[in-house]
Amino acid sequence: MPPTAPLPDADNLARTVPRKVARRLLPLIFILYLVAYLDRANLGFAKSDMQAALGFSDTTFGWGVGLFFIGYLLLEIPGALFVEHWSARKWFARILVTWGLCSMGMALVRNEAQFYLARFLLGLAEAGFFPGVIVYLTHWFPRKERARALAGLVFGVPVSLALGAYTSGLLLRYDGLGLAGWQWMFLVEGAPAVLLGLAVPFLLPDRPADAHWLTPREREWLEDTLDAERRSADQESGATIWQALRHPAVWVLAAGIFTINMGGYVLVYWLPTAIQGLLAEAGRSADSTTVVVWSGFVFVCGIVGIYAASRSSDRTGERKWHCVAGLAMASACLGLSAIPGQSWEMVFVWLCLAGFGAFFWIPPFWVLPTAALTSSAAAVAVGVINMSANLAGAFGSPIVGEMKDAGLGVRVCLLFPAAFYALGGAIVATIRVRKPLPET
Image (tube, rainbow, N blue to C red):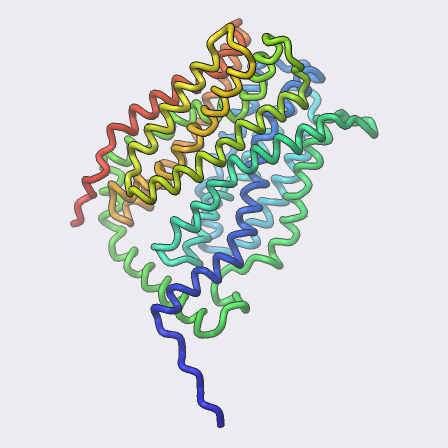
């Protein structure tokens, strides 16, 4: 009888199991997040053609952007609870199918009321996805592995915007079968969410016990490790939750990201508008496809910014000033891009540098809660901070729309986010990252 191979030891399992889980789950989750962000943000690429076809003002557009976040906030927390207490794959499937249909439904919009309703329903449909993913990762990754698992999702934002810009640019050119290019854009870009929603129940297991691609020993180790961490968190949470809500660091970070995202979401949704106006001033082609392609270059620089920040802040261990530096760079370069009389080439250089800084701050920022709080308190803080981040999306774009319709011109689309990036950086600079929350 052949000798029995020795069981892998705990140290070996701690190295190999999270990697195996990451290879199996994270690529699909990344694709889902990429599709999600494109379906919420592609309105910015369609703005010019959609406004021309439907006669919407900038104020109407701004409120349409903001209503998405109102709907999103209403179901954000319930969505996370469904993942925790029901089924992640079934909940994600529901989210994907409904938000895909709502996104495709944007092609049917004919008036302001329909536009507002479509954006609000899209927010409701997508709500719970990102917080649900955060909860889902706790079902699969031990605590020390979760930050790295989540870090990959951050790349989904600029990647989605960059790829979406070029895809949208191609679709905006196509008019056929009685539909305009902007209508085809919503139909084609919304369809992948529906298809993925139908596939997710077969591709995404709920818990390690359902993962047949793990060996029995690997499943046992992973479940035991996660159960031990949950028991430890339950013992701590009664005190640290209230400590977290009383701790100044939580509210400084919440105020910081609210302020930052007041500018950040404006940049995402209004950058094509700003570029169109600046190109027209420079006597360059300013059709929708050209504008979207130029916008895509700026978001590609954002991908580089996230990579550079991740490497630099991890290497040095410093987070706060990396975050502040990225925000200062975005603010300064957006301000410089708005100076009249420059060549388009110089303006575009400033915009690309602004794109680099506008995403550079993100990886170090999300490490700051753990730098100022205990792990349990940091978990509470992330929830509060994430809600503040989304709440900002409901305000910035409506304000910019009102300002543009009041005659302040296209440069408000650049100077508004520049001002809020600067203010957000000043707020983050006040955080005391080396004073952890005391345990009781």
